[in-house]
Amino acid sequence: MDHPAVAQVVTFAIPHEKLGEDVGAVVVLREGSQATERELRDFVGKRLADYKVPRKILFMDEIPKGATGKLQRIGLAQKLGLA
Image (cartoon, rainbow, N blue to C red; front, side):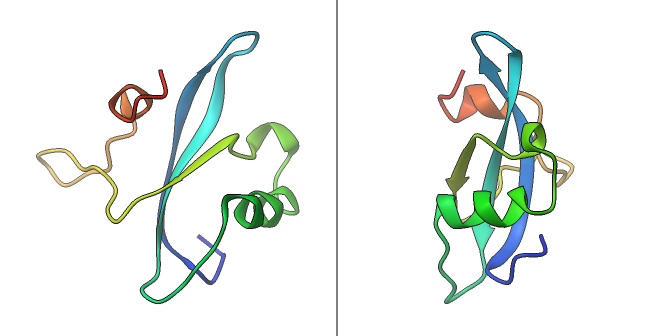
């Protein structure tokens, strides 16, 4: 969320062959802003431990939300075809 181009972000678990789970992220960019997956991974890598840096970053117009308006983290990898 600290990156100037990022409006919203949610992280979630994605399957990993050896580790069991890895980190994925869905990012909504601010209107008129641009960022690449590599740019965001490098930005986050300077602030977090390597194992916390998302291995896959997807850009979307809106983060999926449930009936109550909460961000849908559980099962997000499967909904996005990453599981």
